Length: 413
Image (cartoon, rainbow, N blue to C red):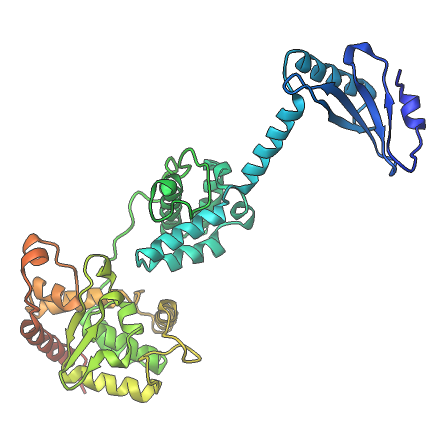
Protein backbone atom coordinates (compact mmCIF):
# COMPACT_ATOMS: atom_id res chain seq x y z
CA UNK A 1 0.00 0.00 0.00
CA UNK A 2 1.25 3.50 -0.85
CA UNK A 3 2.23 5.73 2.05
CA UNK A 4 3.35 9.35 2.24
CA UNK A 5 6.80 8.21 3.34
CA UNK A 6 7.13 5.71 0.48
CA UNK A 7 6.17 8.38 -2.02
CA UNK A 8 8.64 10.93 -0.58
CA UNK A 9 11.42 8.34 -0.52
CA UNK A 10 10.81 7.17 -4.12
CA UNK A 11 13.86 8.06 -6.22
CA UNK A 12 13.79 8.76 -9.99
CA UNK A 13 15.30 6.25 -12.40
CA UNK A 14 16.44 6.48 -16.01
CA UNK A 15 12.89 5.69 -17.14
CA UNK A 16 9.47 6.30 -15.59
CA UNK A 17 8.10 3.65 -13.28
CA UNK A 18 4.90 3.07 -11.37
CA UNK A 19 4.11 2.32 -7.75
CA UNK A 20 0.78 0.55 -7.28
CA UNK A 21 -1.58 0.93 -4.33
CA UNK A 22 -3.20 -2.04 -2.73
CA UNK A 23 -6.34 -0.08 -1.80
CA UNK A 24 -9.23 -2.13 -3.15
CA UNK A 25 -11.64 0.84 -3.01
CA UNK A 26 -9.88 2.36 -6.02
CA UNK A 27 -8.55 -0.46 -8.15
CA UNK A 28 -5.85 0.65 -10.57
CA UNK A 29 -4.73 3.57 -8.40
CA UNK A 30 -1.03 4.31 -8.24
CA UNK A 31 1.83 6.75 -8.65
CA UNK A 32 4.15 7.42 -11.59
CA UNK A 33 7.70 8.57 -10.87
CA UNK A 34 9.25 10.36 -13.87
CA UNK A 35 13.01 10.54 -14.62
CA UNK A 36 12.83 14.21 -13.66
CA UNK A 37 11.62 13.25 -10.20
CA UNK A 38 8.04 14.47 -10.77
CA UNK A 39 5.47 12.26 -9.05
CA UNK A 40 1.90 12.00 -10.40
CA UNK A 41 -1.12 10.01 -9.24
CA UNK A 42 -3.09 8.03 -11.79
CA UNK A 43 -5.94 5.57 -12.12
CA UNK A 44 -5.88 2.84 -14.76
CA UNK A 45 -9.08 1.13 -15.84
CA UNK A 46 -10.78 -0.83 -18.59
CA UNK A 47 -13.08 1.43 -20.60
CA UNK A 48 -16.72 0.39 -20.35
CA UNK A 49 -17.24 1.95 -23.82
CA UNK A 50 -14.59 0.23 -25.96
CA UNK A 51 -12.97 -2.34 -23.62
CA UNK A 52 -9.52 -0.77 -23.97
CA UNK A 53 -7.10 -0.34 -21.09
CA UNK A 54 -6.76 3.39 -20.28
CA UNK A 55 -5.32 5.71 -17.67
CA UNK A 56 -6.22 9.16 -16.37
CA UNK A 57 -4.01 11.56 -14.43
CA UNK A 58 -5.35 12.68 -11.06
CA UNK A 59 -2.80 15.23 -9.87
CA UNK A 60 0.79 15.77 -8.78
CA UNK A 61 2.40 15.06 -5.45
CA UNK A 62 2.89 16.93 -3.11
CA UNK A 63 0.40 19.54 -4.39
CA UNK A 64 -2.18 16.76 -4.18
CA UNK A 65 -1.87 14.68 -1.03
CA UNK A 66 -2.16 10.91 -1.02
CA UNK A 67 -5.49 11.15 0.81
CA UNK A 68 -6.91 13.60 -1.76
CA UNK A 69 -5.66 11.40 -4.59
CA UNK A 70 -7.34 8.31 -3.12
CA UNK A 71 -10.65 10.17 -2.77
CA UNK A 72 -10.48 11.39 -6.36
CA UNK A 73 -9.51 7.91 -7.57
CA UNK A 74 -12.53 6.48 -5.78
CA UNK A 75 -14.79 9.01 -7.56
CA UNK A 76 -13.33 8.13 -10.96
CA UNK A 77 -13.59 4.39 -10.24
CA UNK A 78 -17.25 4.85 -9.28
CA UNK A 79 -17.85 6.64 -12.60
CA UNK A 80 -16.20 3.76 -14.48
CA UNK A 81 -18.32 1.21 -12.60
CA UNK A 82 -21.38 3.27 -13.62
CA UNK A 83 -20.47 2.89 -17.29
CA UNK A 84 -18.65 6.17 -17.94
CA UNK A 85 -15.25 6.58 -19.60
CA UNK A 86 -13.40 9.43 -17.79
CA UNK A 87 -10.66 9.46 -20.43
CA UNK A 88 -13.19 10.27 -23.14
CA UNK A 89 -14.85 12.89 -20.95
CA UNK A 90 -11.48 14.47 -20.23
CA UNK A 91 -10.65 14.67 -23.93
CA UNK A 92 -14.04 16.21 -24.61
CA UNK A 93 -13.46 18.79 -21.85
CA UNK A 94 -10.04 19.64 -23.32
CA UNK A 95 -11.57 19.98 -26.78
CA UNK A 96 -14.27 22.27 -25.38
CA UNK A 97 -11.68 24.45 -23.67
CA UNK A 98 -9.68 24.64 -26.90
CA UNK A 99 -12.84 25.59 -28.77
CA UNK A 100 -13.54 28.37 -26.29
CA UNK A 101 -9.99 29.66 -26.69
CA UNK A 102 -10.57 29.82 -30.45
CA UNK A 103 -13.66 32.02 -30.06
CA UNK A 104 -13.32 35.63 -31.19
CA UNK A 105 -12.16 38.32 -28.78
CA UNK A 106 -13.61 41.78 -28.24
CA UNK A 107 -10.85 43.10 -30.51
CA UNK A 108 -11.98 40.67 -33.23
CA UNK A 109 -15.58 41.85 -32.83
CA UNK A 110 -14.68 45.53 -33.12
CA UNK A 111 -12.51 44.82 -36.16
CA UNK A 112 -15.41 42.97 -37.78
CA UNK A 113 -17.76 45.88 -37.06
CA UNK A 114 -15.28 48.37 -38.54
CA UNK A 115 -14.90 46.16 -41.63
CA UNK A 116 -18.70 46.01 -41.93
CA UNK A 117 -18.87 49.80 -41.81
CA UNK A 118 -16.13 49.98 -44.46
CA UNK A 119 -18.11 47.60 -46.66
CA UNK A 120 -21.06 50.00 -46.45
CA UNK A 121 -18.85 53.00 -47.19
CA UNK A 122 -19.34 54.48 -43.71
CA UNK A 123 -16.69 56.94 -42.58
CA UNK A 124 -17.41 56.04 -38.95
CA UNK A 125 -15.23 52.94 -39.42
CA UNK A 126 -12.21 55.15 -38.82
CA UNK A 127 -13.69 56.46 -35.56
CA UNK A 128 -14.50 52.92 -34.39
CA UNK A 129 -10.87 51.87 -34.91
CA UNK A 130 -9.68 54.99 -33.08
CA UNK A 131 -11.95 54.19 -30.12
CA UNK A 132 -10.63 50.63 -30.04
CA UNK A 133 -7.09 51.90 -29.63
CA UNK A 134 -7.84 54.75 -27.24
CA UNK A 135 -10.86 54.01 -25.06
CA UNK A 136 -10.94 50.24 -24.51
CA UNK A 137 -8.47 48.62 -22.06
CA UNK A 138 -6.11 46.12 -23.74
CA UNK A 139 -7.05 43.41 -21.22
CA UNK A 140 -10.69 43.60 -22.34
CA UNK A 141 -9.73 43.60 -26.02
CA UNK A 142 -7.99 40.23 -25.49
CA UNK A 143 -10.98 38.68 -23.70
CA UNK A 144 -13.26 36.26 -25.61
CA UNK A 145 -16.26 38.34 -26.51
CA UNK A 146 -18.80 35.86 -25.10
CA UNK A 147 -17.29 36.52 -21.66
CA UNK A 148 -17.78 40.31 -21.85
CA UNK A 149 -20.36 41.35 -19.27
CA UNK A 150 -22.41 44.44 -18.54
CA UNK A 151 -19.87 45.35 -15.84
CA UNK A 152 -17.06 45.20 -18.43
CA UNK A 153 -18.99 47.60 -20.67
CA UNK A 154 -19.47 49.94 -17.71
CA UNK A 155 -15.73 49.71 -16.99
CA UNK A 156 -15.15 51.03 -20.52
CA UNK A 157 -17.73 53.82 -20.44
CA UNK A 158 -17.40 55.10 -16.86
CA UNK A 159 -13.87 56.58 -17.19
CA UNK A 160 -14.91 58.37 -20.39
CA UNK A 161 -18.00 59.87 -18.75
CA UNK A 162 -16.14 60.78 -15.56
CA UNK A 163 -13.55 62.79 -17.45
CA UNK A 164 -16.44 64.93 -18.70
CA UNK A 165 -16.82 63.44 -22.19
CA UNK A 166 -20.42 62.34 -21.67
CA UNK A 167 -21.52 62.57 -25.29
CA UNK A 168 -18.44 60.61 -26.38
CA UNK A 169 -19.25 57.95 -23.77
CA UNK A 170 -22.68 57.55 -25.38
CA UNK A 171 -21.07 57.38 -28.83
CA UNK A 172 -18.78 54.58 -27.66
CA UNK A 173 -21.81 52.83 -26.14
CA UNK A 174 -23.67 53.07 -29.44
CA UNK A 175 -20.74 51.63 -31.41
CA UNK A 176 -20.30 48.75 -28.95
CA UNK A 177 -24.01 47.96 -28.99
CA UNK A 178 -24.00 47.86 -32.79
CA UNK A 179 -20.86 45.68 -32.78
CA UNK A 180 -22.48 43.13 -30.46
CA UNK A 181 -25.61 43.10 -32.60
CA UNK A 182 -23.44 42.32 -35.61
CA UNK A 183 -21.67 39.56 -33.66
CA UNK A 184 -25.01 38.03 -32.72
CA UNK A 185 -26.16 37.83 -36.33
CA UNK A 186 -22.94 37.60 -38.39
CA UNK A 187 -23.36 33.89 -39.13
CA UNK A 188 -26.81 34.63 -40.58
CA UNK A 189 -25.46 37.29 -42.96
CA UNK A 190 -24.28 36.33 -46.44
CA UNK A 191 -21.58 38.98 -46.19
CA UNK A 192 -19.89 37.39 -43.17
CA UNK A 193 -21.02 33.75 -43.08
CA UNK A 194 -17.91 31.60 -43.02
CA UNK A 195 -15.66 34.66 -42.78
CA UNK A 196 -16.39 36.14 -39.36
CA UNK A 197 -14.82 34.59 -36.24
CA UNK A 198 -17.10 32.47 -34.06
CA UNK A 199 -18.20 34.51 -31.07
CA UNK A 200 -20.81 32.34 -29.32
CA UNK A 201 -22.59 35.50 -28.12
CA UNK A 202 -25.88 34.71 -26.38
CA UNK A 203 -27.02 38.28 -25.65
CA UNK A 204 -25.98 41.91 -26.10
CA UNK A 205 -24.38 43.11 -22.82
CA UNK A 206 -24.66 46.74 -23.93
CA UNK A 207 -28.44 46.65 -24.35
CA UNK A 208 -29.17 47.21 -20.65
CA UNK A 209 -26.50 49.89 -20.12
CA UNK A 210 -28.19 53.27 -19.81
CA UNK A 211 -27.01 56.32 -21.73
CA UNK A 212 -24.93 58.86 -19.87
CA UNK A 213 -27.06 61.73 -21.13
CA UNK A 214 -30.74 61.36 -21.92
CA UNK A 215 -30.27 63.01 -25.30
CA UNK A 216 -27.35 64.60 -27.09
CA UNK A 217 -27.30 68.37 -26.85
CA UNK A 218 -28.07 69.69 -30.29
CA UNK A 219 -25.74 72.27 -31.76
CA UNK A 220 -27.14 75.78 -31.42
CA UNK A 221 -24.10 77.93 -32.06
CA UNK A 222 -24.14 80.26 -35.03
CA UNK A 223 -21.77 83.19 -35.34
CA UNK A 224 -23.23 86.68 -35.42
CA UNK A 225 -22.45 89.14 -38.22
CA UNK A 226 -19.95 90.91 -35.95
CA UNK A 227 -18.26 87.59 -35.10
CA UNK A 228 -18.04 86.68 -38.78
CA UNK A 229 -16.33 90.01 -39.46
CA UNK A 230 -13.94 89.47 -36.56
CA UNK A 231 -13.08 85.95 -37.69
CA UNK A 232 -12.61 87.02 -41.29
CA UNK A 233 -9.98 89.62 -40.43
CA UNK A 234 -8.17 87.87 -37.58
CA UNK A 235 -4.41 87.30 -37.58
CA UNK A 236 -4.62 84.65 -34.84
CA UNK A 237 -4.87 81.71 -37.26
CA UNK A 238 -2.36 80.14 -39.64
CA UNK A 239 -2.98 81.23 -43.25
CA UNK A 240 -4.11 77.78 -44.45
CA UNK A 241 -6.50 77.17 -41.55
CA UNK A 242 -7.86 80.71 -41.85
CA UNK A 243 -8.59 80.13 -45.55
CA UNK A 244 -10.24 76.79 -44.78
CA UNK A 245 -12.62 78.53 -42.39
CA UNK A 246 -13.35 81.22 -44.96
CA UNK A 247 -14.14 78.61 -47.61
CA UNK A 248 -16.37 76.77 -45.13
CA UNK A 249 -18.33 79.90 -44.36
CA UNK A 250 -18.53 81.19 -47.91
CA UNK A 251 -19.74 77.90 -49.44
CA UNK A 252 -21.74 76.41 -46.54
CA UNK A 253 -20.33 72.93 -47.19
CA UNK A 254 -19.29 70.28 -44.65
CA UNK A 255 -15.91 70.42 -42.94
CA UNK A 256 -14.44 67.28 -44.51
CA UNK A 257 -15.87 68.19 -47.92
CA UNK A 258 -13.79 71.38 -47.76
CA UNK A 259 -10.65 69.95 -46.11
CA UNK A 260 -10.48 66.95 -48.46
CA UNK A 261 -11.26 68.90 -51.63
CA UNK A 262 -8.94 68.49 -54.62
CA UNK A 263 -8.18 70.97 -57.35
CA UNK A 264 -9.64 68.78 -60.08
CA UNK A 265 -13.10 69.22 -58.48
CA UNK A 266 -13.09 72.92 -59.39
CA UNK A 267 -14.01 74.24 -62.83
CA UNK A 268 -13.29 77.96 -62.67
CA UNK A 269 -14.45 78.51 -66.27
CA UNK A 270 -17.88 77.05 -65.45
CA UNK A 271 -17.77 78.57 -61.94
CA UNK A 272 -18.59 75.19 -60.44
CA UNK A 273 -17.33 72.93 -57.66
CA UNK A 274 -18.36 69.28 -58.13
CA UNK A 275 -18.20 67.14 -54.97
CA UNK A 276 -18.20 63.47 -55.99
CA UNK A 277 -20.97 61.27 -54.58
CA UNK A 278 -18.52 59.08 -52.64
CA UNK A 279 -17.21 62.13 -50.78
CA UNK A 280 -20.63 63.16 -49.54
CA UNK A 281 -22.14 62.38 -46.16
CA UNK A 282 -25.35 61.40 -47.96
CA UNK A 283 -23.58 58.80 -50.15
CA UNK A 284 -25.63 56.04 -48.45
CA UNK A 285 -28.80 57.68 -49.82
CA UNK A 286 -27.53 58.99 -53.12
CA UNK A 287 -24.41 58.55 -55.23
CA UNK A 288 -25.05 61.69 -57.23
CA UNK A 289 -22.40 64.43 -57.15
CA UNK A 290 -23.19 67.69 -55.40
CA UNK A 291 -22.89 70.79 -57.57
CA UNK A 292 -21.80 73.91 -55.71
CA UNK A 293 -22.03 77.11 -57.82
CA UNK A 294 -19.18 79.57 -57.35
CA UNK A 295 -19.04 83.35 -57.46
CA UNK A 296 -16.15 85.71 -58.10
CA UNK A 297 -15.94 85.97 -54.31
CA UNK A 298 -15.04 82.25 -54.15
CA UNK A 299 -12.56 82.44 -57.03
CA UNK A 300 -10.56 85.05 -55.13
CA UNK A 301 -10.48 82.74 -52.11
CA UNK A 302 -9.33 79.82 -54.26
CA UNK A 303 -6.49 81.94 -55.69
CA UNK A 304 -5.40 82.74 -52.15
CA UNK A 305 -5.53 79.04 -51.22
CA UNK A 306 -3.41 78.03 -54.23
CA UNK A 307 -0.85 80.73 -53.46
CA UNK A 308 -0.72 79.75 -49.76
CA UNK A 309 -0.64 75.94 -49.80
CA UNK A 310 1.13 75.48 -53.18
CA UNK A 311 -0.06 71.89 -53.62
CA UNK A 312 -0.93 70.37 -57.00
CA UNK A 313 -3.63 68.01 -55.71
CA UNK A 314 -5.10 69.03 -52.34
CA UNK A 315 -6.37 72.47 -51.42
CA UNK A 316 -5.38 71.84 -47.81
CA UNK A 317 -2.58 69.24 -47.71
CA UNK A 318 -1.43 67.69 -44.46
CA UNK A 319 2.19 67.95 -43.43
CA UNK A 320 4.22 65.93 -45.93
CA UNK A 321 1.68 66.51 -48.69
CA UNK A 322 0.63 62.86 -49.07
CA UNK A 323 -2.91 63.38 -47.75
CA UNK A 324 -5.46 66.08 -47.01
CA UNK A 325 -5.79 67.81 -43.66
CA UNK A 326 -7.69 65.93 -40.98
CA UNK A 327 -10.81 67.26 -39.29
CA UNK A 328 -9.08 67.59 -35.91
CA UNK A 329 -6.39 69.88 -37.36
CA UNK A 330 -9.06 72.52 -37.99
CA UNK A 331 -10.71 71.80 -34.64
CA UNK A 332 -7.42 72.46 -32.82
CA UNK A 333 -6.89 75.66 -34.80
CA UNK A 334 -10.36 76.97 -33.90
CA UNK A 335 -9.89 76.04 -30.24
CA UNK A 336 -6.66 78.04 -30.16
CA UNK A 337 -8.35 80.97 -31.87
CA UNK A 338 -11.23 81.00 -29.38
CA UNK A 339 -8.82 80.98 -26.44
CA UNK A 340 -6.71 83.81 -27.91
CA UNK A 341 -9.55 86.01 -29.16
CA UNK A 342 -11.98 85.60 -26.26
CA UNK A 343 -14.82 84.83 -28.69
CA UNK A 344 -17.58 82.54 -27.48
CA UNK A 345 -16.62 78.94 -28.19
CA UNK A 346 -17.57 77.47 -31.57
CA UNK A 347 -16.52 74.53 -33.73
CA UNK A 348 -15.73 74.42 -37.46
CA UNK A 349 -19.05 72.75 -38.22
CA UNK A 350 -20.85 75.71 -36.60
CA UNK A 351 -19.86 77.75 -39.66
CA UNK A 352 -22.23 75.58 -41.71
CA UNK A 353 -25.02 76.54 -39.31
CA UNK A 354 -23.88 80.16 -39.55
CA UNK A 355 -24.25 80.01 -43.34
CA UNK A 356 -27.73 78.51 -43.01
CA UNK A 357 -28.80 81.15 -40.46
CA UNK A 358 -27.36 84.28 -42.08
CA UNK A 359 -28.37 83.21 -45.60
CA UNK A 360 -31.92 82.85 -44.30
CA UNK A 361 -31.76 86.39 -42.95
CA UNK A 362 -30.93 87.52 -46.50
CA UNK A 363 -34.19 86.10 -47.83
CA UNK A 364 -32.80 82.88 -49.33
CA UNK A 365 -35.45 80.18 -48.96
CA UNK A 366 -34.89 77.14 -46.75
CA UNK A 367 -35.25 74.81 -49.74
CA UNK A 368 -32.56 76.64 -51.67
CA UNK A 369 -30.27 76.79 -48.62
CA UNK A 370 -30.71 73.03 -48.26
CA UNK A 371 -29.90 72.49 -51.92
CA UNK A 372 -26.84 74.72 -51.72
CA UNK A 373 -25.56 72.73 -48.73
CA UNK A 374 -26.27 69.33 -50.28
CA UNK A 375 -28.86 68.10 -47.80
CA UNK A 376 -30.63 64.94 -48.90
CA UNK A 377 -34.11 65.78 -50.15
CA UNK A 378 -36.15 62.86 -48.80
CA UNK A 379 -39.70 63.70 -49.90
CA UNK A 380 -41.23 61.35 -52.48
CA UNK A 381 -41.25 63.94 -55.24
CA UNK A 382 -37.57 64.84 -54.83
CA UNK A 383 -36.43 61.26 -54.33
CA UNK A 384 -38.29 59.54 -57.16
CA UNK A 385 -39.45 62.11 -59.68
CA UNK A 386 -37.60 65.42 -59.65
CA UNK A 387 -34.46 65.08 -61.82
CA UNK A 388 -33.84 68.84 -62.19
CA UNK A 389 -30.43 69.95 -60.84
CA UNK A 390 -31.63 73.44 -59.81
CA UNK A 391 -28.26 74.86 -60.85
CA UNK A 392 -29.58 78.22 -62.16
CA UNK A 393 -31.60 78.73 -58.98
CA UNK A 394 -28.64 77.73 -56.83
CA UNK A 395 -26.38 80.16 -58.70
CA UNK A 396 -28.75 83.02 -58.00
CA UNK A 397 -28.96 82.09 -54.31
CA UNK A 398 -25.17 81.80 -54.05
CA UNK A 399 -24.72 85.22 -55.67
CA UNK A 400 -27.09 86.68 -53.08
CA UNK A 401 -25.14 85.03 -50.27
CA UNK A 402 -21.71 86.04 -51.60
CA UNK A 403 -22.84 89.65 -51.99
CA UNK A 404 -24.27 89.70 -48.47
CA UNK A 405 -21.15 88.10 -46.99
CA UNK A 406 -18.97 90.59 -48.87
CA UNK A 407 -20.86 93.48 -47.28
CA UNK A 408 -20.76 91.78 -43.88
CA UNK A 409 -16.98 91.56 -43.73
CA UNK A 410 -16.32 95.16 -44.73
CA UNK A 411 -14.70 97.00 -41.83
CA UNK A 412 -15.93 100.53 -41.27
CA UNK A 413 -13.09 103.02 -41.26
